[in-house]
Image (cartoon, rainbow, N blue to C red; front, side, top):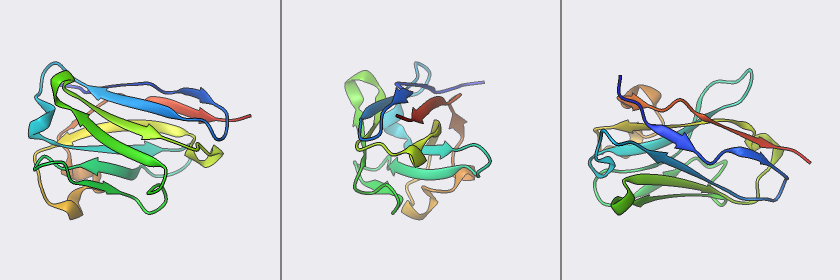
Length: 126
């Protein structure tokens, strides 16, 4: 089964930054809406951001809007999620997903996506 590959997670102190990457050699990511989700222990998977396939429109959950930045590098066929001012509550497994849709309201819905990665762990602790 096709998978996306996330990388860039790790253990970071509060206030630090990370850049997560989502890549694949099997899809051209520009043709898909790419979403980032996270799942903390004991909690449901939460959509945090997406970038639409049509142009570069970006969407963020209210809880992360001022600290998360999603972007594409078409030349590298990679989508990034930069997280600034990391907080302990950002601790989670972060997943990227690809879906063939352009409707903004579908971004935060996991079932909108056809392809998923295996996740990368982000831990924020002093």
